[in-house]
Image (cartoon, rainbow, N blue to C red; front, side):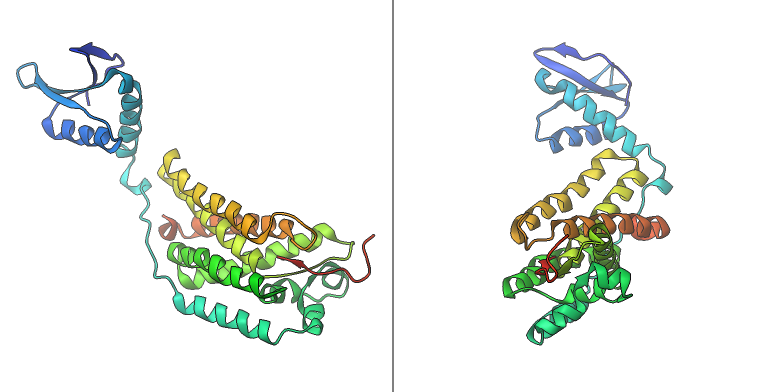
Length: 287
């Protein structure tokens, strides 16, 4: 592309770029067409270069898009990470769903008291299993159904992104760490929580962490836009599970998301090829 900072108008059209070959001109014309705009190409200077014209109202935007495209094309090949797409790991999702349904069908108040996330038993009595086992407990059937159907979508997306085995392990780890962080926040106040949505929001965080790393490694701010999709999805999930109320543990959702984001970034870094005073007996909050 022949560098020029001037936008020249001719015949009601604006010159947005000059190129040394027809192949290069056609390449940049496709950039304009991808913007859903029209353009005109003309051979000039006795066939020595080719000029592209567009409507003046869009000239500045087109030239900015040209600059972004040129920057991306000039990125060294070793800085353009391959982004593999793993298989969905549906067997892990089915195993997860079966486990949640089985536990819910056999769940009792005694089970909840013994295995839900709780601050004092965790930090004072050493019941370390609670942040993990609470992921398998649910307050009611809609709570369970939401975590299986809605949460499962994003868990499968994580499996597609970083691999089914690593992905599902990371989901469980992020959910567990999110529960630990939440219990630590409430301690020494008594606190009870249950539900798999901490892990669901951990899955969303994993997707964000991976997207942020990909954008950084590609040196492309436009690729960071992919991280916005899980964030928007998280807002939708907050609406689904409830963004407030005494029985909704919003903090656990946030903690799960943050832990997932940090874990997703860490996985991408070590696997660059793969990223390319309360009541004495409070009611459990639904995570």
